[in-house]
Length: 335
Image 1 (cartoon, rainbow, N blue to C red):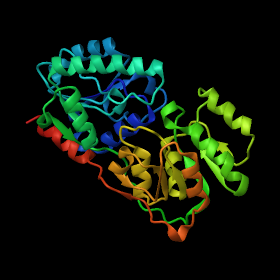
Image 2 (cartoon, rainbow, N blue to C red; image 1 turned 120 degrees about the horizontal axis):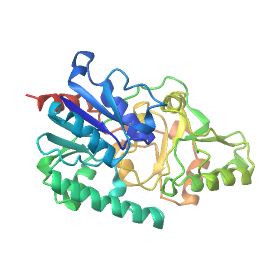
Image 3 (cartoon, rainbow, N blue to C red; image 1 turned 30 degrees about the horizontal axis):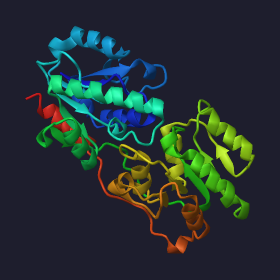
Image 4 (tube, one colour; image 1 turned 135 degrees about the horizontal axis):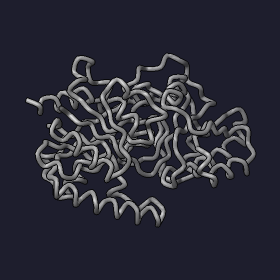
């Protein structure tokens, strides 16, 4: 049996990857799989209900659950960056999706401590378990090989995301969409500052955000500007995000660091206009319509002010989804 361990998967990006992987498993093959599902997902999602699954709640509960079924498990695929301890008798491959394990320059001091500690623990677990690694990009592959001293031959590239179809809706030049959470490195406050200035001239333009109420500082900033042009939709589902992408809103993705950039790829396959900073993580996965200098308000404002549809190329993706290949690889290890 193949264990897909999603114990530490609870963020939107991770949940989308988890769901996309399960969708790649043919119904006739599902009996070969068992799932560990983070308890935080149990009441809010149902995409895993066609599989045999166990709810897990953290590091030690995960170990306990594994001990109950270990004699049935031959392959372990862990989605949450953390290899499973005490699984020496099984082939193990761990999906590492967190660039912040390596790049902590653009997060707060407290988060730097958190990510440094987590990185140290994950490195020790990789050394102890000898787990293979699955990654989404060649950049992450190089980082893991260097930081964790893991041979490149043990690291496999399996990018996983939803390949959307090209939208047929005309571009909404006055509607901008920034699907993002409120962490500091996401740079949402930067975008709010730019649009507060931009909408003084372009009064019919609107910026749509997806900030949950827990980011009080950003919510207060939106209220401070008191502009009808900046609309916070709150935390919305992936399907709702995709609907706005398909409606051909202009996508703004201001983040300073990302492990993968799922929104960029989904928007690029849809051939939306994407505006993003000129950074490696952006250029690794897509060719945006407009690149601006990171955190340079004047540069972005100038490019927005000169936005003309006839001068823009539609964004294009640079990589393909390989969730089917990942499932085939896992099943091949059963032989």
